Length: 221
Length: 356
Image (cartoon, rainbow over the protein chains, first blue to last red):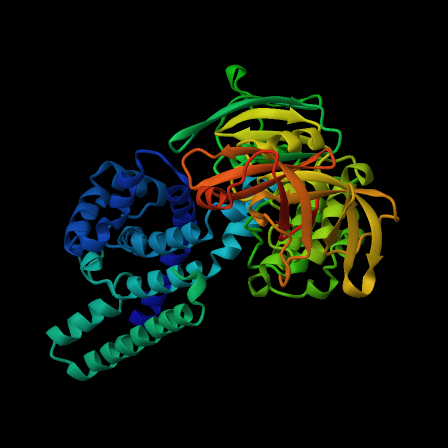
């Protein structure tokens, strides 16, 4: 059981870290651009919110399996298949949790607005300088919200994991899968422990986010 | 020397401003609201994608026909925004250091600027907790500390109280000499023009309509249409007769008439000052009234009655010792008092401000 908990935390942490690196430039671009592609990219980013996880999982399975182009390339690169592996879960989670990182960040960057960045430019700060020293710290609370939500949402995923990861102990058997299996095997006591743990965890996370937003309502996402 | 010829769509109008400014010190950009003053500053700073050319000293900042557009942070421009735009995640000190750390070596010294703008008590504070006037001073200090060659100030005195306004006005005026800095200051206050300007540009409906020496331009403007709103009036030259410090008042004279100026002047007795008197602050009486709080009753002769288009008002132009006064009164009042050219009347002046 602890194996599943640890694996879940590792997956959520890796996903959050990767999404920080992907989500930051994406959210920044969405905030600043006047490109016509913006609504299209915004839509694609939001798709995982409405699609059943099984749909996302199904297509990821098709793309990542060792017989596909990408899957074969991955096998060549690492000697391992992307499907039914931890790496595959990470890739799937990144897609699945993308909106939970990008949307709060975009809202935070939009709340910062152009004003402070123009002020920074007029004081001689170049784009990178202004981004790291003005936009990023001013959007700090957006980052906290985004990371907490991404982490929590990744912990809660089930359908996508089942599709691309299966149920391999220590490799892809995360908490939600473990609960499913325990219930199937009628081990209700074990299922209760994990489930109650998740309920408690989710409550704490959301409470944290909401009270953070309540206490500093000015720069809220 | 600053030369620009810029073109930028502005909502339903356009900014199409061109001028070549000698820029001896402080150039005041004057005009009614919506004339494009702030937009012109933003073009000079490089924020909005204007087309055209901008040259400052020997540098080319913009030349769209040759594909040149120097980015904002590479132009030696400082900008004090009307809305201050302080960085809310930094303290006041942090805001000022953000500027001074990125400034060239010959930029104004940190302590001197902080002293001059009286910011020591605020250094540890968070910007969000400050008043508008305090934020404005910090924003000005931050822009000065960046050590720009061209400093753009958008209504830098608007949120300050009158005692600060005078001191900071003097400081702004001293900047070109202290540092090798040229200034463009946006304002629509005649008082600020007179206080700050060594050079003046008048903008109306997105175009430069006049430029030159401030005193001459102001005379012309005050009677004309650009200052049509709140500030329309006259400039009068008066002689300092008596300073009454305990009443915070100075008595000045125009020809043989004495006026009370609610301000203590540093000028010596017998010196000359210029007063700004708004038309809307002048009322007319056909006899000298008593039992009235207005101190300034000026006997003068009506020269002309000028109807104002599309409104219930007329401007009554009056002569006093070779100078002019203007009163904006309603058509109805003029009719009932039966005011006519040549008539002797009393101009009751509610408010006199110093223009220089």
